[in-house]
Length: 302
Image (cartoon, rainbow, N blue to C red; front, top):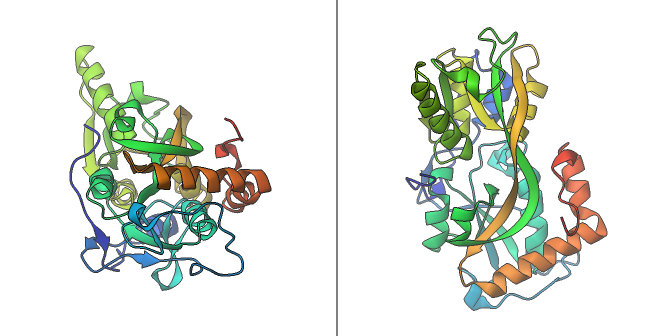
């Protein structure tokens, strides 16, 4: 139950959130709904002086020669979100743009709802996925991964934690929002079953197409808890420390990977080589440090 519907490309519309959501939710909601209008480009064109190719990629391995088209759910800062001028920004954006540059390609970003991001890759709507996609065994059956960071799960609550939530076990009878197709959504459903098995009220899990929409529900007090990744929780609490707090400790650390289609070895191997070079020369470390994600850094060979 890790993938459902599919939304293909960004149409540039940004959601406007109410005052109750504030700056953090507004930043999360900067991603628009998908359409067939095309993807967003970012980074320097191929062939610039700064772009020393780490490996060559044959045209047959790409959707469009000269481009590295990347599917990403551009709604989860600080990894990926839309900034001024509707330009993609974030750690994933910087990493993908740098990889493309080292392959002598132009990075083109395809804003894609997370729930349909693997089907989008399989349908050749992009060349690779770079969107904090957890490297899980069931996903390795359908895509190939180049791991590039660590992540985990966390629960966000209103400041003061009025429901006294400390872990998943405390969610029985609570209303919890999360994004469709995510690991935390699976964990919430599993916890709901544990609650009813123990004779307790089920967890009311409310799923949304975009992570920003799930956060909005917490800001509007429509749910008690918002479940997401550690990176997003850190971002939100740093922007609005007087409104939100982390409930308990993060859990479920896992590797995240850049996904390519099964069998596309030329592109997979080129991305792996480019990323290894970024680790070696310190570029990768600088990107994570810029976005204050040093704890997520994947060491060489790790």
